[in-house]
Length: 402
Image (cartoon, rainbow, N blue to C red; front, side):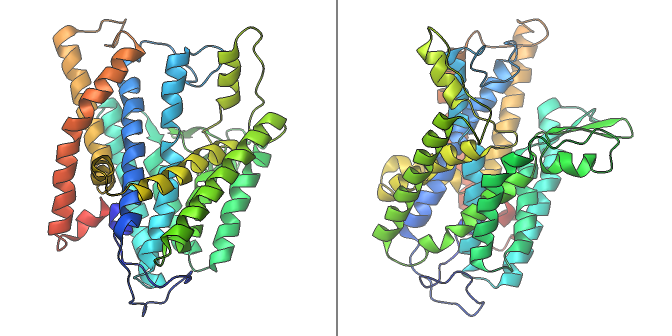
């Protein structure tokens, strides 16, 4: 996605600039902030993936189950819930910035090809690393699949007026919870399409199971919202952009708190746990990610907008620079860290065996936190190398897809 956000920017207020637009302004703190936010959520993602690799021995059906999950594990998982919605929204924003230097046809073609490439990665390279099976016995359609298909859908939607894309995003995000009661059993003509779009579940293709972990429809809404705020990042009025980011972020968080307190729409109801304030708070914060509910999107994107305003304000600091490096080569980091984790896990099994029934695991969530801190720096340097390679070798066309 960094290759999208590195595009030049046209004049302020142009929602769908024509191909002849050629008045770029300095990227400056704007693009550093975007890359830094992407890098930040990827660091949070690393924590969750370490947990999934080295804490498998702890039986958890739902990692945000307020009744059963330990509070330290619950709040560790909560940090990672920012990752997918912020990343998808930034993909939409990056697509808009790319369109400021390219025609609609060029932007549409790039989004379609990039989206198809991501779907192919999910079906092959990403699925293989989770289980190391040849041939695979099950296929998981997860976040890279959802981002790829969302980009393909956006490649068609960008031919609509900007306001229409924003409206589509709002309607999908705000209204798709009404579709929750709709289900179609296996064998029904609509079972396949509805499972892909909204009803998380299993598909069966001649006895081969496919798990749809990320139903597509809400993510289309999120990527449209990212595209919708694109004009805020065009032009030199930095103060106005930050005001919009902060106001919208605060409004989304207030909307989340009010709707959640009312307990009538937007997610499954929360509850008061007698004698346990912590469990009550956990219930209030436990939101549905699969598919992402209205309240889930309000909370995570609200925080994301505030972080984006903050990162842009402190863009010249060293930490933000480090995060921006990670965010400038996101697909490389994603694939690289998955294979590093799998290699570390298999190496641990080879050296120490399985210490928890059939798996190897760290003794507690605190060990996961320590491993997370230790791994950030070793992953940073290869990512920086690849990001530098992308900048130097623009003649290698396929690099832009990473």
